[in-house]
Image (spheres, rainbow, N blue to C red):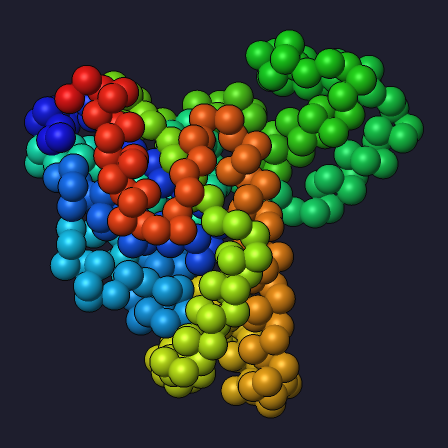
Length: 317
């Protein structure tokens, strides 16, 4: 099931999403092994080097099954967002496809995946006082006046926004006042969507009680493997003040232990609770995207074979 060597448009792109601890990494590696694919990570923490334990990066056994990409490619003191990730992933998908392998985009960061397949524009950071000023003007001038102002600045955006939609009117105006560019112009500067010949979406399903059990076991395993030591090492190397990666789930709680703000037992319980809550939000995200076909992933070997056969059925290969 190899891709045609075309650097512009992949014949086929496979998406594997789902909540944390649902076995995505193993299923993706097994699927890639079956289909002649390369696993491209869509995880906002696994992309950083040195963050092995807390991000649950695939271990040697899975890495040996198939090639993997976008694991540990950035220093933790580098910042990344969905826009920047989408550009990196697009390059990797095209590279993998051009090599004749099947790109298998895999991860639980749903926004990153959506940015890749649907495209995304780089949302500017606007000083908060700009919005406050506009909210004050809204109260004194009203929706119609602000909409009229927007029509004079950015008629294309104004035509798409109802004059009673105060939130979107303010957003479009604050972008212009904060950057000097219209929101329409900025949206034309996008990380373009990857337009594959066919894109198939799969989400990994695990019964909720079993998933939570896996979360508990995974966190315990992280602690046993040395998550605290890993965090201490990262702090020594990069500091902790402005390193966004060290604010991610697991590392933040270990930082609190290092700094004396928490004890290890409390930190572990907090990680487990927040990870369960994160898994709930991931379930909601993927279920709200109707493109995903849910696959029972209690046995990743069976799930990978099921997906492989489904891909063959959908592509006629």
